[in-house]
Amino acid sequence: MASKRVYVSPLREQAAARTRAVILEQAEVLFAERGYGRVTVADIAAAAGVASKTVFASVGSKSDILDRIVDKAVVNSGYEEAVARVLALRTPQEVLQALARGTRAGNESQFKAHEAIRKALPVHENGEALWERATAAYREALRAVARHFLDVGGPARRHSPEETADLLWFWFGPTGWRTLVVENGWSWDRAEEVLYRTAVAALI
Image 1 (tube, helix red, strand yellow):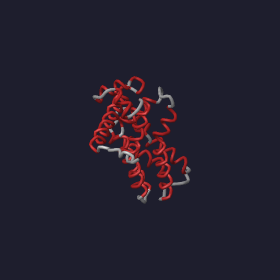
Image 2 (cartoon, helix red, strand yellow):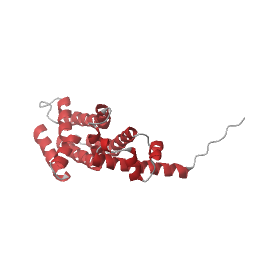
Image 3 (cartoon, helix red, strand yellow):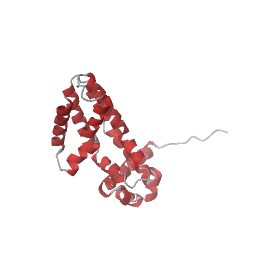
Image 4 (cartoon, one colour):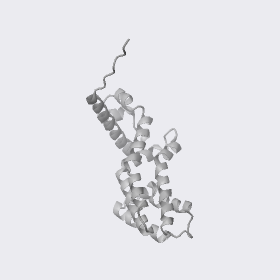
């Protein structure tokens, strides 16, 4: 007996993808503005203009939605391309300048997602694992930059590769950017300039 072919409509798939995108976008905004703990699936559904059952069917639970926001933010940060550009540079100053520019671009473009993640940490069922998922690639990228910085002439006598990576995380990680821009009201331009000059003064 011949099995029935399952017909998949491209238009239906496109519509479903658009629905998922809208749900994730609205959830990101709500999580960033109100905090993960104060947002319900019904809130997300209302903002996206769909029924709550559509949210569950399309994206999943609130925790699933946050996981997708984390994954999307990591990909959309452009960290792989930024690191590739940094690793092609041949002087310590160029490396730090490009790192300041690249991390600024990633943090600025993914600001809402970072706020959504940060505000979820105190109330999420596994906040530590969530933060690890959100930052693991970022930290590994800075470790690669630290090794390259020393390879192209950064003074190795001051700090080990591990300490250099820790300092880059301190200055150019998401907390450093947020401290200056959000908590202290600096412009992104000013934060980029000062973080770059701080790193040069300390490491070179």
